[in-house]
Image 1 (tube, one colour):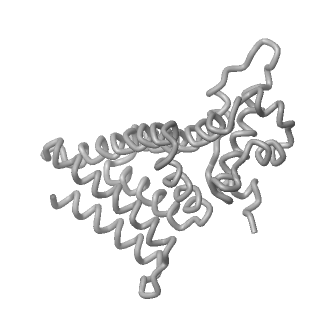
Image 2 (tube, rainbow, N blue to C red):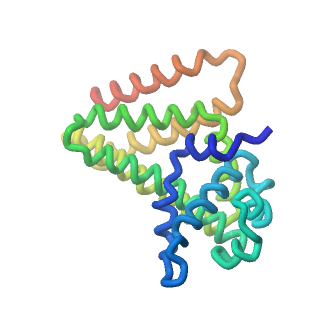
Length: 222
């Protein structure tokens, strides 16, 4: 059974205002950003809960309670709608992590800990896991999606590198880049592991707790 859209939106912390800014309002459509934000929120929820197979212009129009012609007026085609939905969602996380990294009231270890906690929380969310599995599948066949994901991941790695650099200014840039890449790869691996759920796997809270402690120690002792 599909996750209710409002629950999916809350889990994703989707920001309609941010999404709306992707397409500026016109003189005749002052509510355009809000309407587009709502449509993109529905599109993200549908992609996350049902995957690419359940993602279509007609289905999004039905869930968003707009006509198909209205949806096509705003987004033209399936690929454009898909790309904007992904860009809106990934951009929201990048914005949040960037804010954490720039918070002068937090120590570097706290910043990294907060981001790790949020990333581990995402791996424990079935809707989020489904979204990323669908997203990875799209990157293999859709050039536009692959470009969006590559750009977002690059920004994410840059944010982590900035935090680790403040924690360990004595390390070379190359070493920090290697550590951050390995950290990001483990997060992706944990997401896959959570999907498969091997029988011998320890409890998930224990796994994420130990992984967080391990990475903070690795960076501290490197």
